[in-house]
Length: 183
Image (cartoon, rainbow, N blue to C red; front, side, top):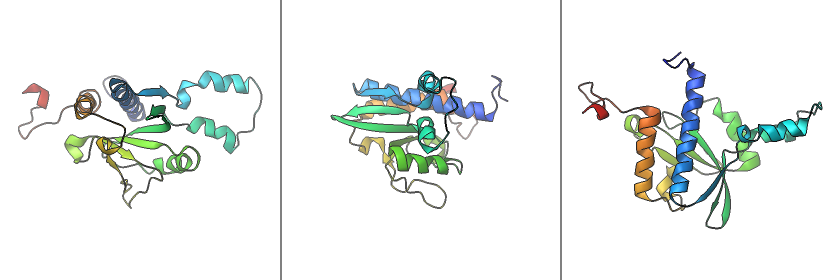
């Protein structure tokens, strides 16, 4: 448990949700249309569909719970976007089944948010479908979000990178043990 009473899983969920909010801010700053679409955003709809019935929890039913985090309208095209915060910039073993479902059903672009200051990968990477990974689960075809073709401006990206560091990862310590914001 941390000082806020969250266990490790709770801390990961908070970081993931913060990453989603920062990605939404990035798109909004650019005037791009983006809508939350993840399952957590339409629990009421799913409850209404179930409405006390004992529905078969088959593959079609389960797809409802695997919808990507966002639907974005970019350059007159509709895009599904999934946001994943992974500290090291690579996927976890537990991500593999979810990636398989995303690959087969929704085919979203994945924005992989990580901690650049410690692991030397871009803070915001775009991982295109079909999500090819190497043996250590690093995305093979990932590229900086600046190269996505979505019109991300460097100054907006820099602002969002600062938000990731201040709100999720915390500032890094220098060789003397001082954090960047303490200097």
